[in-house]
Image (cartoon, rainbow, N blue to C red; front, top):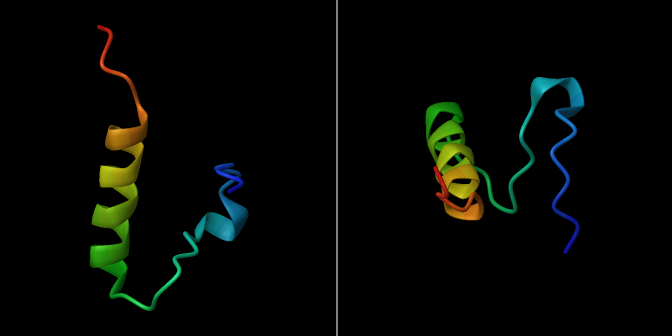
Length: 39
C-alpha cells in the first residue's frame, strides 16, 4: 500500500465516498494514527 501524501489538487482520495468534513476527519485520524507520539 503506497501511503504518500502528495496533496494532489488539495483533495484526499478515499476508498469510499464520504462527505467532505467526514473525509477530512478520517484523514486527520489517519495522520494521527500513523504518527508515533515521541514528543
